[in-house]
Amino acid sequence: MKAVVFHEHGGVDKLRYEDVADAPGPGAHEVKIRVRGCGVNHLDIWVREGMRGLDIPMPHILGSEVTGEIVEAGKSALGFKVGQRVMVTPGISCRRCRHCLSGNDSQCEEFQIVGFQTQGGYAEFITVSATNVLPISDAWSLEEWAAVPLVFLTAWHMLLKRGGLRPGEDVLIHAAGSGIGSAAVQIAKLCGARVITTVGSREKIEKAKKLGADDVINYREQDFSEAVKKLTGGKGVELVFEHIGQETWEKSLRSLAKGGRMAICGVTGGPTGTVDIPFLFLRQLSIHGSYMGGRNELLDVIRLIEQGKLRPVVDTIFPLKDAAPAQKKMAERKFFGKLVLRP
Ligand code: ZN
Picture 1 (cartoon, rainbow, N blue to C red):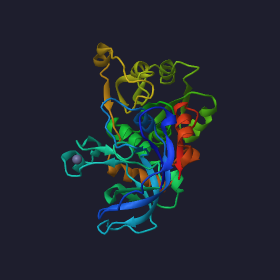
Picture 2 (cartoon, rainbow, N blue to C red):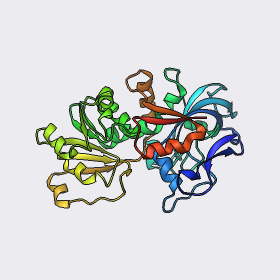
Picture 3 (tube, rainbow, N blue to C red):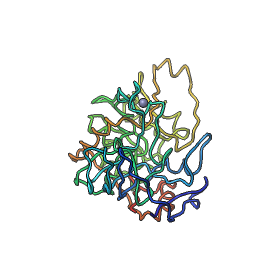
């Protein structure tokens, strides 16, 4: 089959579109899927570049947000049939520990992400465990559905389970134009929060408002922390949705109201940050680390996407062979929503 692989860590030039061995199996409990859409994520870039202690199969196929049609189902993959439209749930876990059994799959000691620690969806076919597959309707195209799993699940878990967002609260969501930001703006709005978001260009302001943002700050023209204080009458927001890291960390903390919470899931703007400890305890702030989410939460997301209450936001669909330009576009932040590959 055709796939985009890299044989060693490095820049986008390491991504090669080539013939590789066909996806295996499927085994009794697995299904083999013809990939129709695969979302591109910052995670893909980090894995391609390499991280300390990273141990992944090589040559490696990226891709954590996969949709397609089943071409073969193992004999114990009950309830699945050939031709069925499905989404791959990106989290792999043991399904028997207390974390898994309480819906906190991503806290499982054995937790892995499809396309990260395993081979992913930058390919014509993928074989995964039947427990990692959910049926999806034709309410959206398979490319559009590929803009859902990782970002909506991560945003959902972070806002609701980790961040404890409640109706009526003020929430600051960084980068409405990013995949995860475009999901978070919609979820927070649906939950009845007042959504303040940031964008890096004027063209993105209207798009952010269309998604449901109440107030949009252009962070290149305004200090977002000061703008947040102004918009909230000096109070600050109850929750900050952080995924930038170093670049925004300190000002994000400064944007919090007393008793406020900050949830963080990513470091696209750098990995380190300092905390003014007295500021933290005197204002009774809390910081919540968040990492993807549980399968049960993805079921909630899928239902709302089916109903049209949340919607996939696709910026561009690239042919699979153009995975390198797609990742380059992502790194340059020149998009709004998701970039999706189509084999
Ligand atoms: Zn587990």
